[in-house]
Length: 92
Image (tube, rainbow, N blue to C red; front, side, top):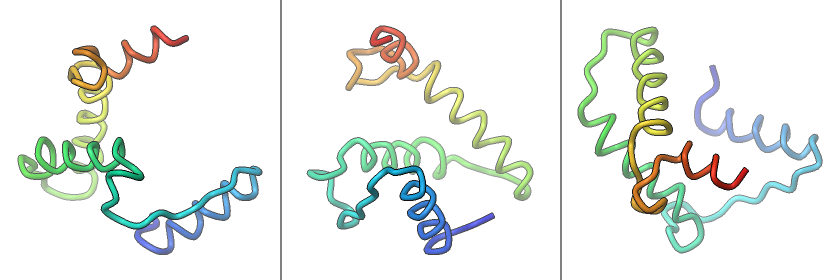
């Protein structure tokens, strides 16, 4: 697994190799990256603060559960009370 700068560099060069221009923005810049900043806040308040786990395997299972809940069951104000999955299906 990669963490921090190692992951950032691998990600950067991977997307560049795919022909996608990747640019870094200043951290904690909601005016530039509001959706991601809001997602991080939700993750922190609704997942990490309530998390109890017994190791990495358990953590991965908990993260999978959280992602399924967040995308398919948790309603979002930004989507007028719909889940991300519902909002995406309407656009397709």
